[in-house]
Length: 113
Image (cartoon, rainbow, N blue to C red; front, side, top):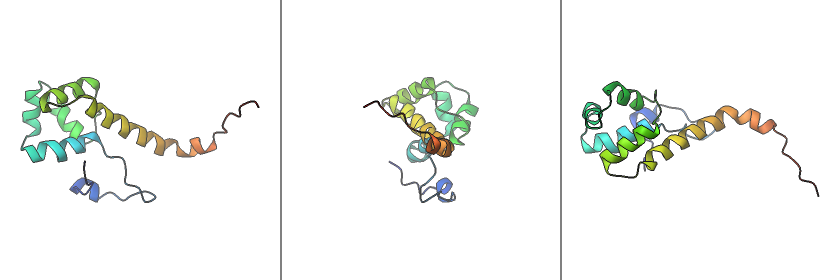
């Protein structure tokens, strides 16, 4: 979907050879708004949300909620689950990074023979 070579992502240093999680707002901006020539203001007005809400999503400061996903899906004429799946993937990757030491220390349950 995205090459992760945008201005925003190319400045980030990968940790352990992996790129950091990509916020759905970056995909919204780089893969939808810019190629289609849609301003964040126009998107906000078209889906009847406050423009700062879109600006915060684009900056990675706000998550895409189910409601926002449905509005984006309706606007772009696509499945709303696409947006929620992007957000869930982002959240899971960040949680995995944050919890890595704790997860590594968990002793798995051994089933009875």
